[in-house]
Image 1: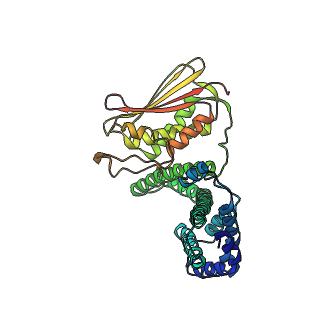
Image 2 (image 1 turned 45 degrees about the vertical axis):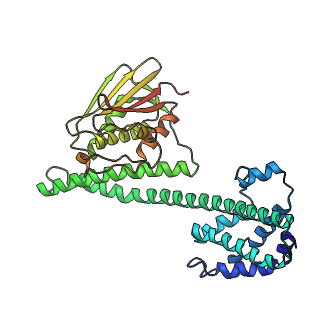
Image 3 (image 1 turned 180 degrees about the vertical axis):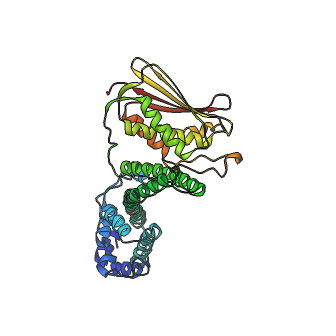
Length: 376
């Protein structure tokens, strides 16, 4: 009996086996109805039969066997099944085990109906396994996409909700650090609270920007006439609050005015300064060198410390990348979730600019930002 015909005629028997296995996938399946457990199983089987009977050339068969012809659909029953399984709390391992069990069930029930192994029988088995793999791939893709959306939504909500208690914490630290408010001990405590609040605020801001980008939101840029000198001073104030022990130096030449988003660029240079302070050698300051030219402004943030390996330079502007620290830097507070340089790159690009990095023992680590004066 052809496999596609067997699946169609024994649909309920196969589905009953599916139900029985799905009930074992705990804890997600514990409180689910039989209809929810079965989900799109019938439609998945129907798609399998169509795939098995679809004509295929020798070239198409070869490409499909190597995974080269797999067009992963996002509107198939398998794709919908993957997303719903994530929303129902199934793990990725449980999702893949459903397909493993379905493959075994169909073959176990069908083979007793095969009187002899023929070319058609072999072809059906090959096409069935290809179809199962295709369905699994579609389910895994939508499961993973749903998982990423859920994670990023959580980050966005968490970051937003953290802002209010952080603001209260920063205000308390500022008050305690005022001269004459308390004792020398409360002054020290207030300074530490202010520094911690500044560190956490930077992390929350980076997390919110990352979540916005992952959820499909555009980087909001509000251009206005501004002077980078003022932006540098604000960024230095933020960086000194987080790294009071680090000396920062600013050197500028030329006209630094242009059409910029002051708030966003303050975030860029605060992130670059924090990163440089975190990885600098103890005996060296962190410097900002800015040069205004006819149409652009070039800014370099430099620190001397352990050189960044060439392979790491290729990835430092990617999200969630953190460099390792040398022995002399162990114990320094981290001011990054591995998002700071990524956010700096995104804001720079949104301004029509560029950002790059070089690092060696002689010249130190240099982050170079080039910004056009005029809005493009």
